[in-house]
Image (cartoon, rainbow over the protein chains, first blue to last red):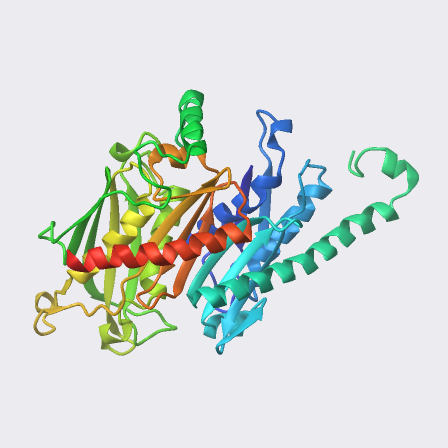
Length: 178
Length: 258
């Protein structure tokens, strides 16, 4: 599996030079590793699954949003997966642990902790920067996991919604593009 | 970028693990012998050679005046780079930095930056115009496992021995770079619900999940990173953090003796 996280030059306040930078290389790596544990790649020997994530407008939490979208897109593409992956961040802002920090909170925040997990609570992504005591870390992980559980419901609804709206031949037949 | 490991070796490690043992006789949370040599490169402003068991990492620090970033006109700049030299491991190739190399450099950088080990405001020369730029260059000389912890230790050791070369640039007398914290990275792998600290190269090859915890002198966590294509239970992560905090304290004590 390959994963490319890319930010559009206009997605941030100050124009970003187009193309990959060191940050996007790292995010691509950890995002791929967040999804790999559930993808049954053995069904596709000698093949590659390409995931492209384009950030069009950034307001913090782009890696988690990318992972959430990628997981739904993979399921939509019919890639066999052991489970869904849902991702959410928690942070510390003004000495308070908060869920899903936005840009202003992230810029002036004291810590950022994005996670991704399966609905069963197995963690597939865990990053952190800033400063947290072990106790705060614990609380932030619990909070982010709760957020990820909420996102899972939305992901599920999106997939179920699509298939329940399909007509009978569409459901039986192949993809709309075929 | 993964090291290949034979099935027979994998089985060997696995069978040992079931008996609660490791290949080199260590306990699961025991680090290999650490040695730190400072000032090994004369031309560099600061340097350190770290040996973690057989793994060897050399870190050099260079400094020069330059322009600050627009959003932090009064702060010095840290630029961290990692070279995975091809002779250090069969999986390192010459050419542009690999994903692993970039991740390693960014994690070393995260430790130094987030722990606020360097007082960047003290590195301002002319506000908005000129500040000191610190280049931290990590060379992995021999990868026998857990190069991240070694690199992170090497970076802070090199910074601790760094002299700001002010006289060379006509900016007064040289002085010692003030350091306020000692971030320590502690890495563990998870394999079959066993957590192994300071993994050797074969142990890294069998594990799917690796978790690195970077802690500060005060015992706070200033960075973490899960890597590898495996999963981790939250309880396992918490256990790693608990042990990592203790281990980091031990490493830091040894470090201060050196």
